[in-house]
Image (cartoon, rainbow, N blue to C red; front, side, top):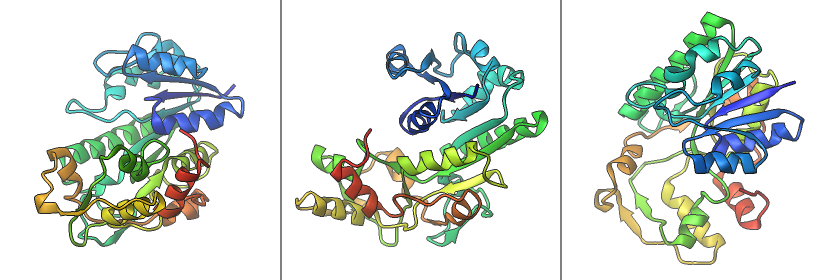
Length: 291
């Protein structure tokens, strides 16, 4: 029996879980709160509460029969919470054959807008990105020591139903912030699920993959396109220097890069369903994908 345990069974991991559950897999996962865990149970999966501050009750026993682990919990100032609290339990999981770690393209830092691939140096500019670099290495070290396959999935900006420019426009929270030359890659949540499932199926010769779309684009262009789909005027353009962003939001603009997904296509054999934001936003509006 194949069993997937998700540390952080949230927006992206849930898409993976649903696909595998449909193939007969047993699914278990964690949420930070009891309310979140109850939502996991309501979806039909085994639920656990894990907020990273202490080992989660019952998780050690659940890991004993787990064959695959997917980690989407971000590291904090103390390191990777999963490894801090459950490293020993994972090391003792004798049935375990695969670990997937959802990281971020933020590990690369800034390339000045140049194209980069997985061979680029991980030179994160933010403390958040440096924590991701360290967490990636910690998972790879565990894999080497215990002969478990680990794949790192470096995700671009995640969007999908309920989390898109269309939703922000409808909510009145969308902004067109313009920083000359700035571009970002994105990735639809369904394409994340396809990628992770390809890794679980045994594809891929290396351990790090950029999970990004084909077309890095200025963020203001995405908002304008979504507004056109909704037949509403786009919000006015605001220069980055006048935007008054929070420190967290502003930090994303510190890195400017174009991320190649060639390895994703060539090694994992993934054909993106939504190769650019245009296909993804049209599908969200049409209701072709569901939260």
